[in-house]
Image 1: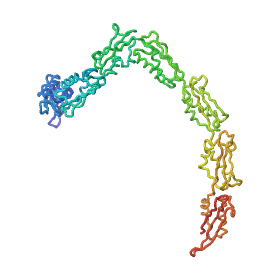
Image 2: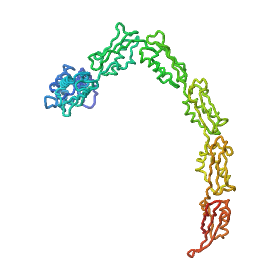
Image 3: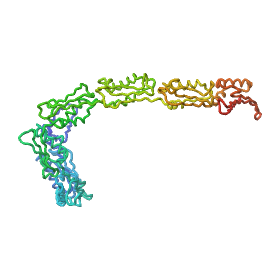
Image 4: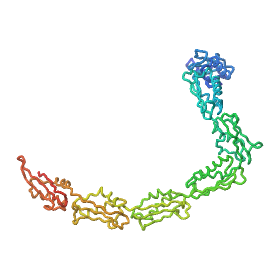
Length: 627
């Protein structure tokens, strides 16, 4: 009901306008200084249901009228509101509409028109009621079938078996019901009354199969608290089970709290359609904290575990078993560390306070386990060691840095021991280093597998794979220049730069001359007592002289017919001497300049013949044009 207190105060100024227009809402009804009680249609809309198929229109209208009268006896049908139905028959059918609206200018009701439509009835609306009448295992099917049909046809007006619905039995036994059977009431497509389906499962739960582990009644607990807790457990496992209908509790009389030796029972009622089983009996005992030891040991209690989080986990575990037990009153939790996070060998003690009401048991001590060295193995393996360069002191510094990163609160550099083998000043190919827990280490477990880092000799194949793509040796190069080039190339690689000529390898050529012939080779061989390099030798063959490069430079010469043959020959020889100083005219090459006529045109040409032997595998000629 809506109450409107309307008060209008008008202050009319003297103006040139001779007309004053006042506008009021419909609810005001132009009554001032009076309190008017009016019903808003929206307030009553939720009280009015939708009409159902086969409902008598007159019955439905009477039902709506009674709802208005329940609000106020002053609300009169057809005086203050109207009910308009669109039906053509005495009974509602799907699609019929009902409109309920205030009568115009009435002084009791205002608001929007209420519209209710006739829809098919969903059979799922019957789920809850069907579960109340569902059969128990062992009950006769035919008997229940009659009960179900009577129930449905009494519940839904006009509904008929095989016209509007069918009943489907999914049973292990054709004559009687068994656990796991199901009954489905399903609508038929031609029905003008119902739609959907309702499924009933024949289940019965043995109260002994429910896990009461976290709800065991404890000494000194209030009976009302225990009852609430047990009821919640049963409800969680068997949603439909109701206290008083399906099960009852039996508590000792004469006290509001439980005492040592009291018995608490859960009894499944004989007529329950949901529960069965022998009585569940609890004998009240004081909780021994030793029963919590395994649970606490399952918690994360390791290096860097948050101290507050772990202590709270223990407190929560105790509360789940004994809800009334309080930290500081019934028991204590003592940690021996001042840090936020636990370190190896830190301890936590759980101890009961003598004279408490809820707990008994000897003190429990939990210790953070020592770490296995494997926690730093990856970091140690990633420490870069350059053979012949990295010292044991530098390696020790990297290990210390790893330990500092592992533990920033306390210094643990003395918690490991580093042993070396075949190592003097720097690491070599035969060196190894082993990291083990220090004697009496509080941080690392003595059972840890040691971390061993073995060095590897540089293999000659590594040298070959590095040099081969970049090292091209051509005839005419000096032996020393190639030896110097190879040493320079090795210096550009981090791992190979430590190799030293005369210590780890030697470089030789097959040439007896200053310049290499194309038949020569260069050999890099390992010195057998090298501490860094292992292998035999690598042989690099010398390539033939590249004639194309020579020709490109000769083409740039300004040789022409205005010069004498000798002048042109001197220009060519000068160029060759600069490019291939190791060659001699007549011994390695010869220049031919000759004249001729072609189609009455005079010309000069030049040919340079390079002999085979030292620099080339076969004789090669370069022809030059003389302008």
